[in-house]
Image (cartoon, rainbow, N blue to C red; front, side):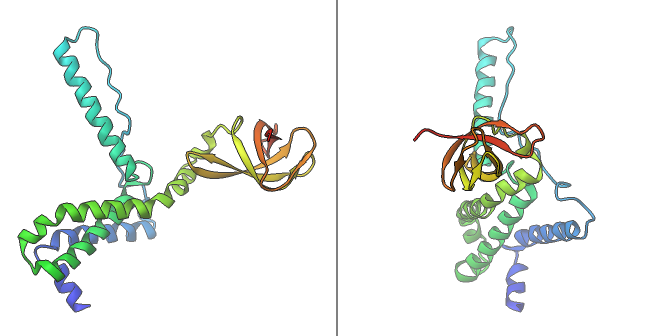
Length: 221
């Protein structure tokens, strides 16, 4: 433990150590209920929308389009690493933790306190840590999508589904719908009064007036 502390306080690692301390303090305050998880958040616009005035000349128009393309590329890159899909501080926390751990290991086995090694290995450290962060945070995407209530905006009618529990015209069953590669479960009944077994493919064609279940019909095989 003492050796780890000594490594963490070396000049080449101190920046990552300070960032890690900030992350730990942040999550401590979240757990204590002092602040909300979204208190430190960044609104990342993943789609660059640019309005071009009719009076703008050709050169200005070209500059705006180039800026839009760059913004779009940056937005897509951030989205790939789950920025904007998972709360900012969750993504950043895993990224900082990974970069801190890799910096400690790199310096311990190869760098021995040398700034040259730390600078050379910064980009590989960042790249590997970003991939690690994406791997860890990807399963959290549907979790936070549900927590913020965005699943209520899903239009289920017209979607294909697969029964996970048998259903009939009288008994409510359950079906799985894939929305953006995310499996969502809904309660279903058959529209025509027949019955369907688990694993049957169906189409959602309507909804109960009270919103308790959806009406489905079997897809033609």
